[in-house]
Length: 229
Image (tube, rainbow, N blue to C red; front, side, top):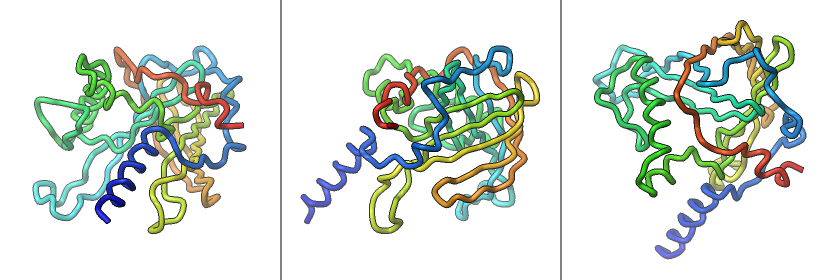
């Protein structure tokens, strides 16, 4: 029994790292082979972030009565490729980030992202491999399409196909639609989950923050083109 459990665990880790899962909604994808972000529409030498809050999880007495501040960020590239990092807090200790202080502020959360970008260039091979934004995994990778003042963002999330019955073995597509306000901001008005065909209305502002570097990975979709035929 122990050997069987160990084999299942090893298979899960390999599957998650190598991308062995079913990819859904490929027919809904933006045409990544013919996609470019038009010049002068959005600044791309950094990331776009939204300032969000969530309720405190019970048991964290230090933060009782307050909201946890966190960031969702999009790194957008010239060819329309996108890397999404979600739920980044200033108070959490991440394996691929280090800071001198941990505070429940947006500034502290931004410092976490900056540290994550530094960790991808670590001289320690194991750290560099673990903190390299998982180039071979579709999780949180996506595409961006800009048409006039409209912006469409798609990204994949790894989820269970049959909850409570199997592992995280399926990649499901999400789509955000909104309006570009300037070359440093846009507003997301809706989110569609293709798995349930449900659309929710939003009003989320994303603002630009310049950085010295971005996740140093290839366009996942171009690299794995055959997967999306």
